[in-house]
Amino acid sequence: MALGDIVSSRADGSGLVDRVVEPSGRYVFRAYFDGPEALLEEVAGWIELRGGLVERWSHHMIAIDAWDEVEAQHVADYLAGLEARGRLVYETGRS
Image (cartoon, rainbow, N blue to C red; front, side, top):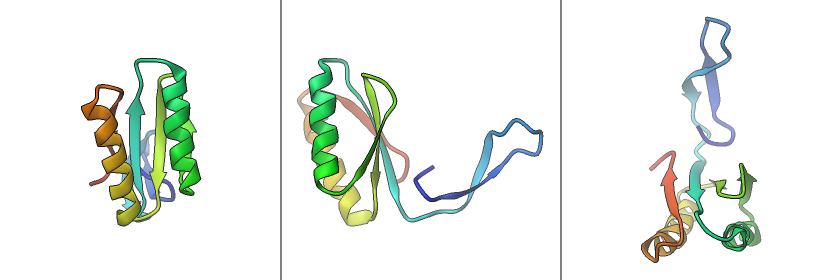
């Protein structure tokens, strides 16, 4: 799921998301850091300076919102470079 997606939840009352009914067109990334928190803050700062949104889940994980395909590619390129150097692991929720 990405920011702004309209979702449907299960009818069993669990509140769990069943499916995305209407995608927002936004992209989401999750990045895991197994090192100093300073790297997480560096990445979050880079995203925020570009006008992106970051949600911190812990000292080791963040979610990143990209508003369109062009910005998502910039974020993916940035994260891929860090991943290639062994500084983090990331995945995308939409490609």
